[in-house]
Amino acid sequence: MFAQAVAWISGSSWCYAIVFGFAVLDAFFPVVPSESLVVVAGTLAGAGDLNVALVILAAASGAIVGDNISYAIGKFVGERTVKRLFRHEKAQRGFEWAERQLEERGSYIIVIARFIPFGRTAVTFTAGYTRGLPWHRFIRYDIVAGFVWATYATMLGYAGGKQFEEQPWKGVLVGLAIAFTVAFAIEWIRKRRERRRPE
Image: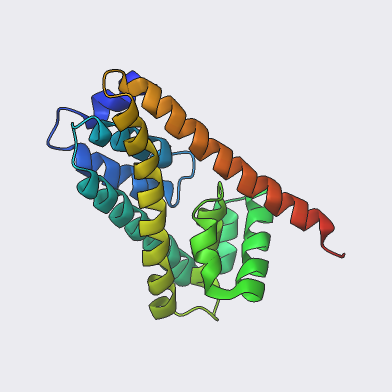
């Protein structure tokens, strides 16, 4: 996986565009491994092959553009069409969760959901078809979410790249391990709270 990711984003003038593109796609296709790619790019930046600020900018910009595409789809096609596109039971539960979170916690859930698997997809689509969240409020929180997420993922890799300049794949493994641990911890806490909710 590391060798393939490095082949995609190193030694090419297109590397930042690839990071941007993966971050865009991940907003509405959660199977796209954008976070892993950003960690790899951060590792290469730590080893001196890429510019760390440009990696963060590319990842954040891609995340923000992708989130806004999801928001626009939710707004213009509506709830019923979105839910028909994502018919899987897990996706339906995700939308129900996102609706509840937006109602209970408000706009700041956009920032938190950036770190939850499928959570960001569910929240951005839901924010679009929910009447209570106008775009001007959504974009403010989404910019914060995009840059916090991009900085977090890039710096995980960057720290590993600095530690393992001679063997950057070790930095990638450390960065990915931390990223997955954080994501699973957030998801575990979310599910635990869901189970404690009164029926």
